[in-house]
Image (tube, rainbow, N blue to C red; front, side):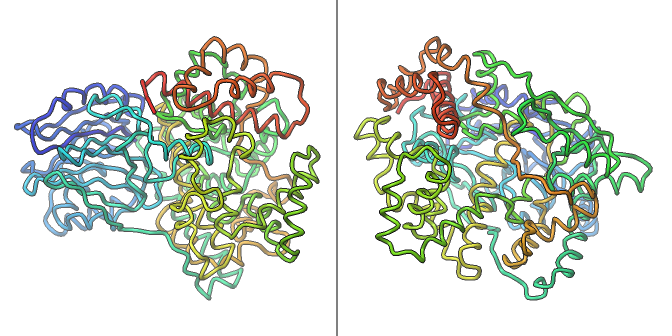
Length: 638
């Protein structure tokens, strides 16, 4: 893992002088080494900070080919690089290192930009072709590794970096908030690619190539995940057999490292399957793998007991980490925001931060089960959405009446009944999008100045057309396919993978996700949606495999996400910090109404009337806190 950045233009620019500052912002991503390559005429600069994992003494970056006509700055791991290296050797290429970086420059010599189709891994890189004077930016197929860029269409200048925090360290980037980003953040808690936080800033999308030439930028797809079911996988036994082979192979290829490697282990099927196959591979070589889990004092969030039993089944060397050691103060919040690089509302990032912080002294690489819920439909929210769809058998007028009659109800049954009735009035993409909404319109409307709210949300009936397009029509698998597409194309890369990347890189820890290798993405696209549930058994065929590896998992247990007890963490100190840090005034500068902000803070600080709404308000205020602190620290304006 590494941090990358660079600049290219049609003429020399003062922006190149800020590359050092960008590298400083990327130091935690690559604390082991730092390098810069620049064109003699000053029109191209590439920067790199390195986290050494393979070929520790070699593979320094930015790296060139023999005649220095191809230069790359690269972040990630290419798991199939040994086979690609042999292919290139057979074609006459010569290597001076043992790592995967050098494979990229020689692959480009052989295949040009199409070389990205051959890669199996997690990656983001910038590659400069000196002969053609072109810069290629690209990301892996599903968006495990991030890449951002700013392009000035007038001058043609382009800057890129691993995260927004590094980009804003360059004075060339205008510090104006993009209203579309604010709308997405308030709704989802994250940004949906290719949206960036600042005007003119974009994300390279998963499976995309962005190519700069003579000041202009072209975009093209080299990969798009699609649902294309195979008939033979309608047989459960065949699906189990194929999945076991693919996942075992995926885990096996991701165990290579010249530094200590471990595995994250919760009480769930995903991490248990990955850890189990890693342990099997290590046992064959006479070793054992270290596993790690977080222990919370709050029962609703603590899976340490089940993780401990699973580790016993697997035979790992297991360590539990105390999850109650984070201090809620300004020093930590500044450090946390720097790690994120931008506002990001998924509070489970705090749990991942803790996990990576505690694991890093023991290992430099960790395996994770991320992606399993998306591949095998493991989210409980998906089943609840399906229940809402079943309300469609009722007359539309009755559903409207039920929704209106239950609005504001505090009881679980009444609240859920009303929510399902209201959701059933929406079409499929609208229901899926609305399910992710973090604020009730009745609360968010007064919170924003009238013109700001109308600008951010011009169409409440069908918001976010870019997300609706990703969800699609469900031509092959109906509503289940649409739910799967949202989680694979939106929630996975924009929320879960971003969270893991930011929190692991904050501690110089490389986290690998075997569930999302090329062969696993292909399997998920081919597995019929109907095969992911058999009776009451969800997440099939993964569940069958996981229970074979760890019998503990066959015992019933409530589904828990890897969360963080945010309400308990904020409860005692939020109001005091809010005043001390003057967050309301900062939010007012970007369109929020001060009286409404203060009213919500006061409401949260008072007696708890409704636990559900209090937890939701805690999450919402945490979102606003991150937004206010980030815009203040970076000098961002609306």
